[in-house]
Length: 597
Image 1 (cartoon, one colour):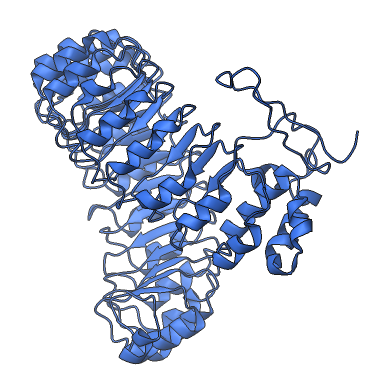
Image 2 (spheres, one colour; image 1 turned 135 degrees about the vertical axis):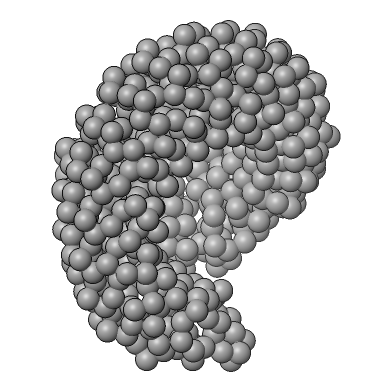
């Protein structure tokens, strides 16, 4: 075999006599890749050979070298790149923010093949010329979310015959002309237009011809309605209409025709009891999000009796939902794995029905009127991985049951009735990675128990009464990545203890007015820190400038401190990408293009 191999076209929509597109692959790719990965090639190539993720592959090294000196490479060499190396080169340019007009000029006209455009959230505006250059017949996926793409730029993408996935989330300048331009994408299966608020029912009607669509996301498209126009989308399996404030009962009636639906979100729409009644025919639903609907408990109970396949159900902030809806869900959908009941009328009596949900992994009871009596049911829910008891009457008695949930990874006890002594019962939760203790009931006395949770990565002590003694206990959590300690009791001594948390990425010491300049010498030891809040502390300009040496710092919050604009200027000189909140740079720095907020 030579240095190139081929990939056979297999799309069943290609007509007879259509010449297959020949796509060359690098001979250095891992042999286990029997076909081109639809995922990021950079992840696969970084693995190199089997079982050795620390050694980069030849493919990865070649892409790195090409991306680092793209302008110096002759056009003939670039044009000869195999398809997988072309793709990896693009991903390296995107990852290093090196994709710009000059790079596009180097790639233009070479006939390179790309399978994916991973441009979502790219810091520079994606221009029409970029998409004209990067679009190719082999393109299968394009992530253009939050790129500022306009209708004009979308037209430049054309209609790649293999494009199956397109993400245009929060491209806020796209109008109804955008969906009209998509009508030629006959292979499209997954389309996301979340946050494209200028799309109206006219744009929705333009999607009716995309009959291969399986997933459609119109979240927060506030003007969208007239879903009856999409009746031809018989293959649709997932539809997100969350926060589409014009969607109402007539649209819910239209949804009854989408019998292949497996996932549906109607969160914060105008659907009421009458609309919910039309969803009974969607018996194959596995995910249903009705958060924030004004729907009665009886209507919900009637619906949930017809949905035996449900795995995920959200009734969050359905204020009229209560024990009837919960009982119906537990009886008729015993395979439920995720259940969100926050801010509903569920009571202690209703919670008893949860006993049959042996596969339940996620349970949210935020702000429900439940306490220790009803929460005894938790003892039998041994598969739970995430549990939210914030703003409930759960007390220390409930913790004896929670402490037996050995699969638990996330626990929220903010503003509950639990105090330090309840924490003593949680020390066996060896898998717990996230713990929220935002409550004045937690003090230094409970921190030695928290320190035994060796897997903890996120700890929220925002309002807890933690002082330097508590910080000394917290410093033993070697795997901690995120920490908020904002109760006002920490001093420079406590910060010195926290300096031992070498993996820390996010740290908030806001509202600790006794934290001052001596603390900075300990904070600068945290080389992984990306976000830091010192608001309402005593730090001053002279000390804060030292934070410029933190190599990963991206965000610094300094509200109500004595830091002056000139100190911000120095920080930005050391780290131009740093975003500073609370203190503006000097006018001179602002004129030079500072990115501070």
